[in-house]
Each structure stands twice: as C-alpha cells, then as structure tokens.
Image (cartoon, rainbow, N blue to C red; front, side):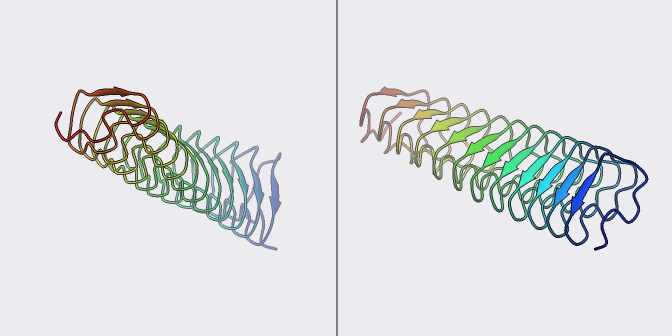
Length: 212
C-alpha cells in the first residue's frame, strides 16, 4: 500500500507500506519493510531491508541498510553499509562507512571511512578513519580519528585520542585522550589514560603503567 506513488523509473522493488513512497527517478533500488526508503527521490542503487531503514534518504546512493532503523537518518551519504538494528542510525551525509551489529556507529553523523563490527562498536563516533572490531570496541570515541581497536572492549574508553592501535581483549581500554599508543595483547596498556607514544606487547604488558 502506498508504494512507489511518485515513481517514473523501472528496475525497482518495493514491499511494505510507504516503501519508496517518494521515489521519482532513483533507479535500481530495493526497499522491503514499512517506510523503507520512504523519502528517497533520486538516490539510486540502494538496498533497504527492515522497517524505517533508509527512510530519510533522498539522494544518497549505493547504500545498504538491513535491520530496523538502520541508516534511518541518512539523506545524502553514499556507499554505506549498515547491518543490525540501530546501526548508523543518525548518519546523515557520512559516506563509505561499514557498521555491523546493534548500535554500531549509531551516533555517526558526517564521519567517513569508519568500520564498526560488533555490538556497540564505535557507538558514539562522529569522526573519520576509525576501525573497531569486537563488542564495545572504541565505544566512547567521539572525535578521535585514525584509531584501530580489535577485541572486546579494546579502546573502549577512548574519546578524542588519535593513532591508537589496540589488539586484544581490554587492550588500552582506559586510554581517553592519549596519542600514538600501541597495545597488543589482552589487557596490554590497560591502566594508561592520557599517555602517549607507548608500545606494549604481550598479555598485561604495561598493564599498570601510570606514566607515559
């Protein structure tokens, strides 16, 4: 009901109330679910599966949203992939992001080239060029950029730090604003907060460090 009401092109699939409701010339779109791609007008090659997925999208192209409200606020962002309820929910114009897992990259608005894999990974992120793999990895990052965190809770306290490389469960999990730290191993550099230019390799390495 009320699908493809304004449409003038072909090669579209719309299933669900209001799916692709406003589409005019956007081609090769797939919308499955209530209000999926609801506002899309000229955006092309988008795939939205789930209620309210990509429902604000207007001209954004080549986006994939799977899950309730995935990429729900996206308007002009391109080449984003969001899989999981509330993933990349607030993204508006950010492009080239990948979010997989509930709440992954949820707060990202305009940040680009971020990858969040795992529930709550990069949850509060608004910056660019971050990679987080694992539950709550880089969860509290806001404006920090060029960070890599792999493992449950890796870099989870980081807020504005840059150039962090944390690999392992709880690696560098207390770093907040420290710059250019490397922690490899479970619990490595776990006590550091504002430290900089440290390298810790091995389980618990520099785990009680209190100075840079």
